Length: 122
Image (cartoon, rainbow, N blue to C red; front, side, top):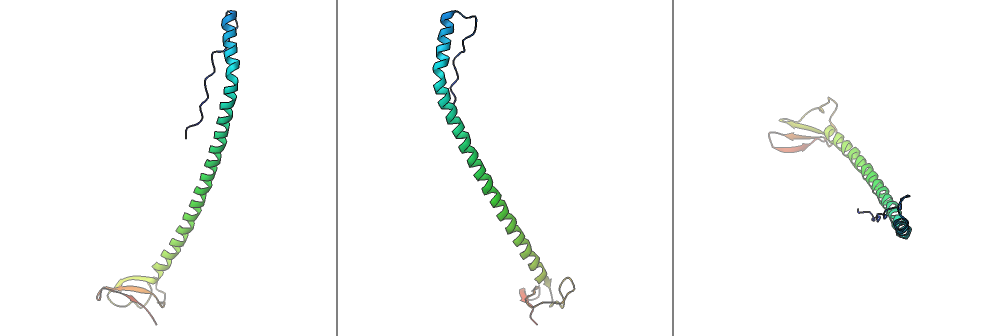
């Protein structure tokens, strides 16, 4: 984002310059102030608008982060559930879960002999 320009002020009058040079520089400096005020106000408005946009972008990023964290938590829960019910590959039906607990209806295993996924049901 390009910010509004500020026009450089003319050379300031310097004490000790001849009267004509001093007066010319003084008049040019005084004449430049209205433009400076306008440009400074435009820059201040740009800064305020840009700050608002940055704040809105930060809020959107924070919301996206929260959404991503929630999705990750759900994915971990699903993965945990899946690893509980998926007993992996076996050549014969397992009699217990991989952790040694009793099989539950819906537990899965891949039968390496038939090449098919099997579902345990009591």
